[in-house]
Length: 203
Image 1 (cartoon, rainbow, N blue to C red):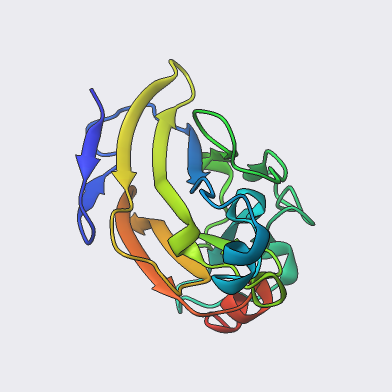
Image 2: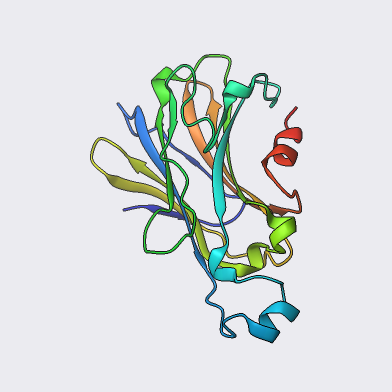
């Protein structure tokens, strides 16, 4: 049975799970359905249809100083696989419609280079400033970790804060703890307008 986390909680990932090497990290969200259907009210309050919010999930591979040392360590829709093959992105989902994961990241913990100490999972709204969109237009956001060998969900974290006005989310982290890996539920919203600004936080 999956462990359900609250914001700020940390949990062991590999300790007590002997042989766990391959995991799938799923991220999901749903657009808030527009009641006005656009028109005058839609143009007055927000400028665009919330049904077309394009969220992008990305992974930052950080060194022991929590820095990104190479563009190859930014895994996103424009760079779907790390050069070492340890992290692979499923690709971009443009709408968030439908049940289940919207984007998935496959991780082979054994292949992660020794100099990489943390994986940070972020979600940003594509072209958020131009489209006048924010995470107040998104609901049911979550991150989950699945054991790839048996498809069992291990960890589930629902992001329940009020993210109105926030255009990016730092969702969660997987990090080294001695010889093991742990997961942290972060759930921090930011006003970074895009991926480039999020990356700068770790440079």
